Length: 99
Ligand SMILES: [Zn+2]
Image (cartoon, rainbow, N blue to C red; front, top):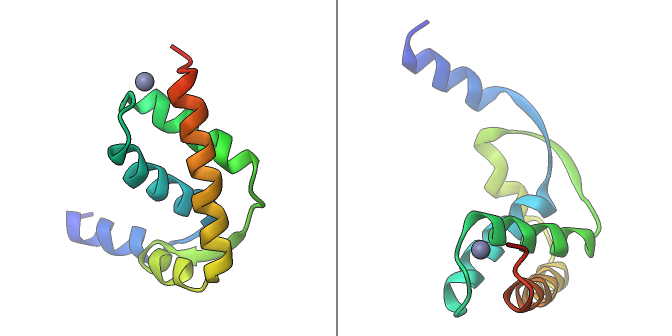
């Protein structure tokens, strides 16, 4: 199988994802850089874990190529709730880094 075929098949493959997890990860990624705190992978994931434990899950079946489109369907109120929980999580990790 050549490289192009691999890329094509993985893009069309159906996957089950929690779109809240995706949204939280990218929100943490952006928000962390604005804050004077440890930028390591462990702190990033700890903040994601804390925020995700405070939010409901939202699983969807999708293909890898359409992830961003799915996130676009989330309403503004929910996106605001994600930002609130991510801010709280980053504050906790900043004050008590687990390493
Ligand atoms: Zn760290």
